[in-house]
Image (cartoon, rainbow, N blue to C red; front, top):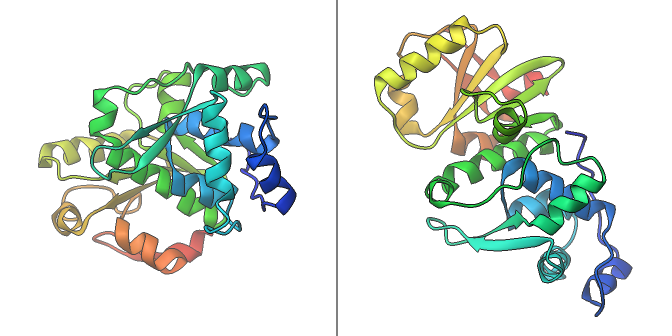
Length: 250
């Protein structure tokens, strides 16, 4: 995906968003549609962080624009079950705008179902990781949905980060899975030449024991999700053989 451009909201744009009348789509709106299309859905914080980073919360420019796009039929909104926060989805009308511009990536419209509602917390964290790495200068990311629905891949990571020509598989572990599951995961990555590194991003209760399993320490690295977001570039990735600070690859 092309770099997502940061945009400041001027007073004129805010006035246009609040004006009564038909919505005139802007380049930023199309980029919002693209990101939603790739990630299935976005939380408000994701949209504001990427596209209205410097807009004040009080002014509410991001919120007003999203509401306009919903009223115009380009977006829909649903509330997540666990976090009780709204998420934004693309509609058929929004997808048509991407199709007209050749930006749909060969993927159909995502339709929410019970499976994704149950797994929404995991998926939102994955999107938070994408936004996090973008904020730290790494904005080339291939989403799980693109790998599945465009490339028709069966077993894929939660995302792929592209750093200086290297492909890094992102695995967001939101809940503890059985030992055999992790052994199979690590065995698969050991045999694969597709990814130079694997970043396992997980909770402390998982990290404390999964690090001792059998994996290639030159390839697989672990970091706690909360530490990564809290420490940013100073976050430490570790395995049973070594460690490195994220700033080294930025």
